[in-house]
Length: 439
Image (cartoon, rainbow, N blue to C red; front, side, top):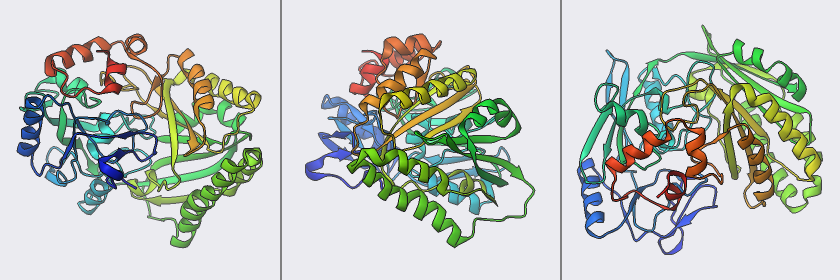
């Protein structure tokens, strides 16, 4: 699953299979000191440096032809502070390991995304998020950060220490330095009750504000070529714990959502004309269910069917019109889309380049099965999202550049000025950052 399975002759590939790179060399530091030394040595050799996590980004945000830093030895919990309710973890720790370790300690993050294969630093640096009425992205839960900057020095930041760095570095795109440790706010582990049920597309849109307001975590999946959605509402619960029974869980989450779905996508890729019929069946395959469990077992699910993805954050008020336009576009385009469209929300936050920076946001994610041409669909979807001043997820496919971002992010200049200060020689530069942040 992870990208550590290196391709031939030192080629690195991402999870989605759409990005590859051939670094001049790879370094797997076992300590912050070793990482700092690798950055200084890269500078001496005139090479750029990028750290790469699990390769779950669909953009080339981590690609480099310079020095590739693999953080898999920088893992584990550094310390748990029960007085301040924080946990400090090494940057290369996979979210899955963090979630499981916290649960054993009777702790949990407040909110998380729907997959947990990524490293904590990769997930936060690209703005990975779940859905929440009051709780934001994983990065919004950060209390302090440690990073190695371009001159090889170690910088720590928080609301009190280097606050201007903290404002930007929580979602730093790898442009400000290499994150080595992250301190997250945690809370005592709690239970969530998930209620999943099908609902007609038109009803979800008509009731969207209500569904959002009445639930701590609301999301839904719309199946293109149908009028059907699958909704999911997660709310805190006093218990008792009532997990999905193992066999039922395997059938719904592995067999239907991964196994049968994989086969259906193979059929759809071979014979696109079958996709609308398959979509009708897929959208009705999952029946309503309710279960109660600890957060990471409710928020996250396995994603074994490989895909490519584009996701935009639009102002929450714009989500219903944007979705209506998206459905109309798919209906008249002759496109054949076998993957559902995922819709989630986040409250406004104060992180400089967060997709929810300064505005309550809704996320619309479009996916295509790996190996299927996606350009026409994504281009048409992007046209809709950008008319609503959409902000693309930093780790998902988009065609926007610095000129566009300077218009949709009021604090864009603040970020680029900080980058000029911390990385004047562009040690952490790559083609993607050149495009999105400017030269």
